[in-house]
Length: 359
Figure (cartoon, rainbow, N blue to C red):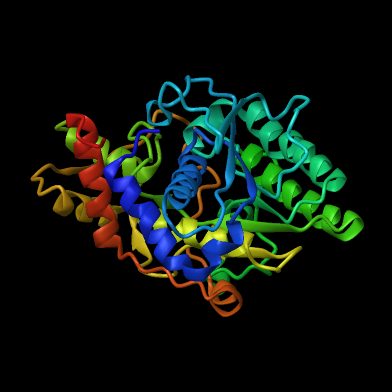
C-alpha cells in the first residue's frame, strides 16, 4: 500500500489521540464499507498505520468494502490484497457475502456531497437504508463486538436559534420532500433501524452524527465548500459563493473526526448517538472564504452569485453547530486541530497533489 505523507501524519495523530485504546483492536477483524470514500479511506489509513506500528500484540485483518465504481484508488496499490488487508468489491445494497468472523463494522458507505446526492437520490437512499439493513442482518446473526453507523448532522435540518449549539436530543426541523430529503430522511430512518436492532436483537450499535469534516484525502472535486474554495484559488479563479455568505458552520479536521468516531466504536455506549465535530469557531461562509484566501496567500476576490440550480439553497440550514458535551463527558473527546492549522494542512495536501509529491 502506498503511504501519503500528510495522511500518514493524520493517522499518527489519531494513534496518539487514542493511546491505550488502540490495543482494543489487537487481533481483530474490521470491516469498513465505503472504503474508497473520504471517511472510509481515512479509517483504512489509520488501521494500516496501526498494523505497521509496534503497538499491537497481534495485527488486525482489515476488510475494505466498496463498489469501486471509479476503480481501486492508487493509494491502495496494484497488489493490495495481503494477509492483513482484503478488498471486497461489491454493492452494499445487494446480497453481500462477508466473512463469518467480523468483529467491528464501520458503515461509511454513502453519497455525502449535497451536489451528488441531489443528482442521485435513489442511490443515496438505497445505500443509507438497504445497505445498512444488510449489515444489520449480518450483525444480528454473528457475534460482532461493535457496529458504527454513520448518520449526519443534517438529520437536525434547520434548527432555530434556541437549539444551536444542537444537542443529540433535538428532534430536528427537516423537510421530508425537499431536495435534500433523500439524504436527510434516509439517515433519520437509518437511525431508527439501528435503534430497534439494538432494542430487539441487542446488536451492539452506535451512531455518529458528523459535522462538516475536511482535510487531506477530501477530493478537490467533491463539491463541498472547503474543496470548492480551494479549487477556485488553485485554478486561478475568484472564490464563488452562491449565497450572501451569511450561513455559518463549524468545521472538524479529519484526524479529530476519526478520533471521535473510533472513541464511539470502541466504547460501550450501545444504542447511543453522538455528535462528532467541533463547537467553535462557528464561521460564516464569507469569512471562511477570506480565511482560505489568507491560507493560500492569494489576492483573488470573493464573488457572490446566484446558482443556476433552482433548488440550490432550499432547505439549506442557516446555522450548523454541534453541542459536543455528551462526547466530551462520556468518551473524553477533545478536538485539537484549529481551523487555521487544518486549512493549512489541507492546502499543503492539495498543492502536493497537483505536483505529485504526496507519496
